[in-house]
Length: 197
Image (cartoon, rainbow, N blue to C red; front, side, top):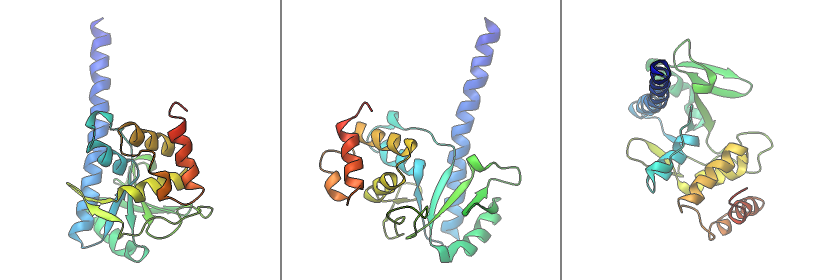
């Protein structure tokens, strides 16, 4: 029994460490960009967590990576700033990202999305502009309306899960589909109409 309990604490410690490492990576990367005078906005799972935490910290879902919105023209300057902070730039399969050190993994990297450009060529709408961001407690954050739009455009299972989290805490209600064009409005309405999937 003692061995099982000991292993449980070890697993718990690793879980806590994993969450803390993502937070540290988020703060290191955004601080490096801010100190270099480079505009950015936090998007993706960390942006969802930041908005959800404003309403219900217990409803926050963890994420393994960091997603940042940058102007395409700032990528070279961002590369210098990020490399000075210990990150390693890579470009693969059309994706710009920064590994956390030479032994870093893609799943825990800082992924870059170019502002005002489609994330994928088939996307119906581009990523937000950097003007669609607001100061957060520790970093610049994509606006909530732009974040919801990004999640509706991507429309993957994890994006729908994030949207459901935001619906569950009351950040999104029946008035929200009217804020978006089709087919985004219908995608959001479907989630509102079928909260249990």
